[in-house]
Image (tube, rainbow, N blue to C red; front, side):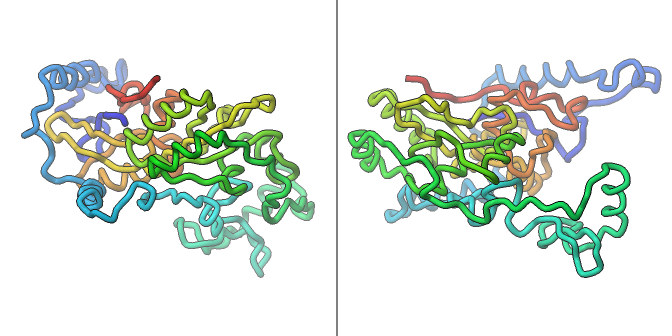
Amino acid sequence: MAEAAAAAGGTGLGAGASYGSAADRDRDPDPDRAGRRLRVLSGHLLGRPREALSTNECKARRAASAATAAPTATPAAQESGTIPKKRQEVMKWNGWGYNDSKFIFNKKGQIELTGKRYPLSGMGLPTFKEWIQNTLGVNVEHKTTSKASLNPSDTPPSVVNEDFLHDLKETNISYSQEADDRVFRAHGHCLHEIFLLREGMFERIPDIVLWPTCHDDVVKIVNLACKYNLCIIPIGGGTSVSYGLMCPADETRTIISLDTSQMNRILWVDENNLTAHVEAGITGQELERQLKESGYCTGHEPDSLEFSTVGGWVSTRASGMKKNIYGNIEDLCYRAEAHRY
């Protein structure tokens, strides 16, 4: 979980910031940046009184409270948010983005984006084909056919410590040993990784995928992994371009893929200090959508905003297009909760 600063009104000034003369702006694009941060920090040092919490709580928090009250609800049964457990049902297993969104040549010979998710979806791009041919020198007639689907027999077998599996079942934490779930979390989106998906297969992939739904679940998983000497590779949106998700080929221990996608709630919003307490698995687009309902934003917009998660931003010290105003993630996150054995 992380607590991050949120800007009011969706502006780059946050709360109470002001600019001086034009000459001042030329010298420093944000002359009050230090003052704003000091005001926010002083608010944190004074503590976070319960009465200061926003009464306009996010829908996810209310839904979570209702689920907790329901006697039939268990962590393994809950699933919500932008990224489902079965990611391959809505997202490409061997490429970037959604299954229903791709570029094709339409009947007019124009490049067109399929699907209905984006402003350009369903629209032909009359000059795009000519541009990539003339400017990039691409031969659009050249085709490389990739594997249409994943063959489970091509994947490395799952090797799981049976004692660990027995204890895991007692926690009610949802898990999977299916090949497609394991392969989907065995890679990021470097060109080499995508090439392997389309043309071959990884030497080593996670043996089991776990879906914690709260911090306590993560604690249980880490404790069990330490007890049985297992490896853990956490995954958020899977947008890594640093090979951080690839499993070492010579690793003989059971490898756990800890998928945070079901930890996707905003727990509270503090309107006095312009901070929010969010879970690590919430995606950038979902975080912005929920904050926007109350008139706020984080101002953090990496290129991977659509799929990357807050936990991924913090762990990789992510930067975004609006960093000159809002700062990088280390400027926006002032506290994070983690667990070590």
